[in-house]
Length: 181
Image 1 (cartoon, rainbow, N blue to C red):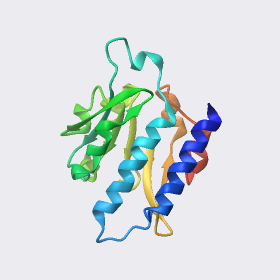
Image 2: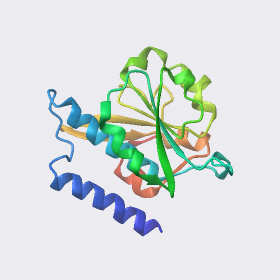
Image 3: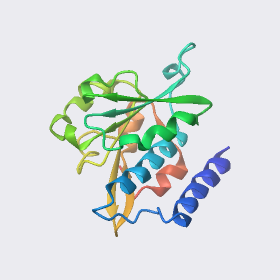
Image 4: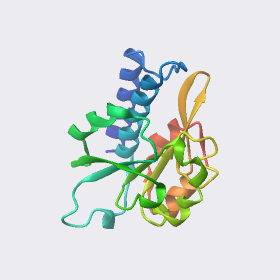
């Protein structure tokens, strides 16, 4: 199973390279940046294990949330036809981190920068993977932070923050991170 996940992640990154989306970010191409980040969000979820109690009987959807102003626009619409661990994905927009209960993966938009202290009080108590492109997000208690390194999209992971919430990132995902805390 581990080899299959590694192969799928490698295949995704290879396809992104072939399509010219491998992370070259130009300031004027924000939509391309968020298309790539959306693809990463879905693939992050495929390489993370949630505690069994996160999906009790009757709750079969995987909920991907965006807190604050939505930088993705219609980009996440493609996720509605995808599954994570055989669970259909439901995309929800929430107006703040504090209202992000019931999410499995939460993207925190830059509009929430002044409210990062809510990470610990809000969904931080649940098994919610928090992701953002806010600088210093991991240091503020977030789990995955998008960064730009050598004009390419990369990410940092706080494995410590994930373990506190009983979340487990695969070795393949941890190996692709620029830094692991």
